[in-house]
Image (cartoon, rainbow, N blue to C red; front, side, top):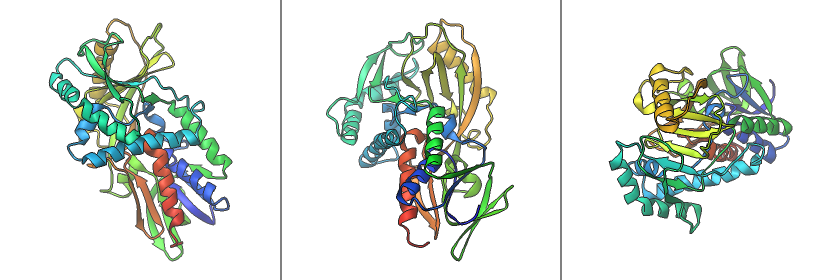
Length: 368
């Protein structure tokens, strides 16, 4: 690994789109992506595949710490980010489907439900301005899927879709390789040192790697490398075995988005429960816990499929990067060192945009 112009730490959506963008701008540049796993191992490959920009209850919650203009900017960034992603990887290649999104409310959440319906026009106004559309984004919808333990009316977002994250990452990897990006797995970054003419990256098993510019696309793992910049947030997930005659179709939000599920290949993929143990889930440990997995199973059996006999096929977790603000951090840290992190659980929506912005920042900086 010699004569590296741009070394990107993190091979997820941000890292790979950043690398592709640099090679598009500077075809002769030597661009290397290193990843701690042999294959992208963060939230990019382990997320639930929601192509979304926020439910009404999530937008209301964000309003506690963001101005209206900041909320509009967030929604717009997510929507534009999804369009950018579709311009890099074709919708067909990542199995992009527009079945709409649905937010439903558990029976004990009458107050939350009423708040959301009281603010429905307000949320629509923000979303319409962000998306530059006159169509209603959010609208009332009945319980169309036979869910139990929820109110009879929820909120539909017809602009929401879903993707196959594995196919997305495979397509991004192929596109990056085709552009001449070098990908090296099994490289665990520890620290870096800025020196005259470049940066030295210290790794656990691969010694020191020299580069002219270092770009950090580590998101949820940034805490291990640069403490205090981003908080890790583990998201636990399970997926069922195929379910005969499954009629559920779309992306679904419960409990202010802390539970979320969707259909995929005749199965249900369900994640969430982080709100049951915020402190315990503030970790980069890629384990699952009985407490949260049990809660997911209760939602599955008691709410989503109360009449069906369902078997769990697999369980896993992914590490998100969060903070008090939802806006991602794309900054110059020191001369020749840059970061694109804190995607706030919206990596599918904004990962490509953050990657492109990170590439722009690094290539337009003349300090090299």
